[in-house]
Length: 239
Image (spheres, helix red, strand yellow):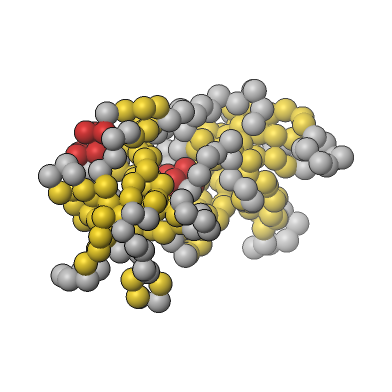
C-alpha cells in the first residue's frame, strides 16, 4: 500500500481473557486446525459455561459432525461487534443433543483488536468497474475496469490504466464481494481524495492509483463491507 494512503490498521494485543465473558450466543467463530492440515471451520458460539469452557456448534461436513478427539488443538478466532479475539483452545468433549456441539477449554491468554472505521485489508484479487453513459450510442454504457488494492469501511484504493478524474470528482463504483458462498454486487458513490502514478510489482506498465472515499454508503453496503472485512481478518494475517 502506498505511503500516500490515509488508511490505518491496528495490531493484535494481549488482553484479559475475562473479556470473552462478554461474547454473545450466535457470535461467529472460526476454528483453525492446529494439528496438521490447518483447515478452517466456521461455527457459532452457543455459550460459555462458568468461565471454564466455551461451547460452540460442532463443525459439520455434509451435515455430519466431524470427529475430533478430546485434546485436539485449535486456533480460535471470534468476531463480536467490532472486536476480534484470537486464542488457542483444546477440545474437551462433544454431544449430539439437543444439537451437535463441542466444548473447548477457556483460554488463559487472549489477543484482541478493535476494528475502527478506517481499518483496511488488501484483498488478493478484487476488481470493480465504473459505468458511464456512452454519448455516441444511446442507451449504452462504457465500462472502465479497476483493480482494488485496498478496501476499508470508509474507502478504497484502486488502480486504473488512466486517471479517473481530479481530486473531489465523484462517481459510482460497482464491485463484487464473495461472501458466505454468494457474490454480493455493491454500488457505492466515491470521491477522489488523491491519485499518483505507480508501476505494480512484477509489471512493466505504469498505472494510476486513486484513493477514494465512500460518500454516504447505505446500510446494506456497510453491512456487507463489514462482514467481508471481518471475515478476511479472521482467516489470517493481513498485510
